[in-house]
Length: 319
Image (cartoon, rainbow, N blue to C red; front, side):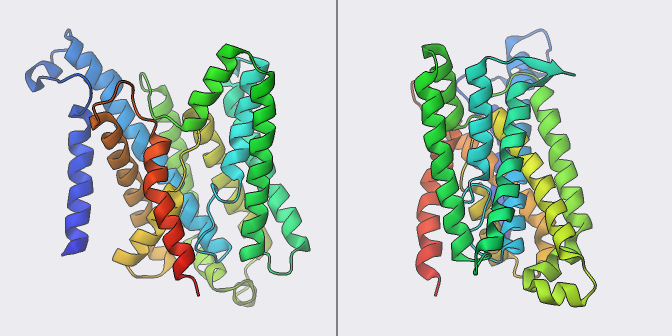
């Protein structure tokens, strides 16, 4: 019963979210395409809700992927420093003042992607030298890497101009503000690819979640499968972070909530986790737009306020 109420609440918020904001919309004028209400609804509100949903899907599914592959409840692209690598890459692109490169692809997107990808391969390489690579040691390594990226970003901030620094500050807080349909379509396509790849490897992921040895006994090429899943996830995270900035803790929270309300094997929780993550981030974004503040509260603050205590809870309950 509680599970049904939770899903009903999140779906209801998703439906009502386009009507929440600083400007009140009259329902009768929304489908009159010559009115301001129609432009706000179809060019700002609906794209933003879809963008938040697809972003939440990517973050939550990446969290499930990392927690399963590394068999650690605290592993996410955020805690392992992969998001920080993408932020640093995007910050370098902002500092260099690079614009569009080709086919509308911006340097921020490209640098963010390679920052995330570099972090993944660096973690995989360094993990070879750790005796307990899949547990606390790798987590500490990711935290150290994240701190290093943050320090490097501060150097970029110190060397930047006032305009560039303002862009960096706003970027690092995370934002789901979009105008038009370009970003929602890009992120939606990437989310669909990520869901498709993870679902295609769902049985391999289930075996890897038990142990590498059992997966090898089943004839699975563990290194190749792990590399494919991590590269696809890093591509999705890198692209998302380059557009929205870092949005923490969604990938940490949602897989555990879904596992609690839907206790089953990993391969059966993939779609549920993707949907729940999307709806959860829409819920958080609706809170930011519903608050009566002078300026819009960054989405990263809301997710951190919810995720911080949850992170502490996970640490405290670990035996």
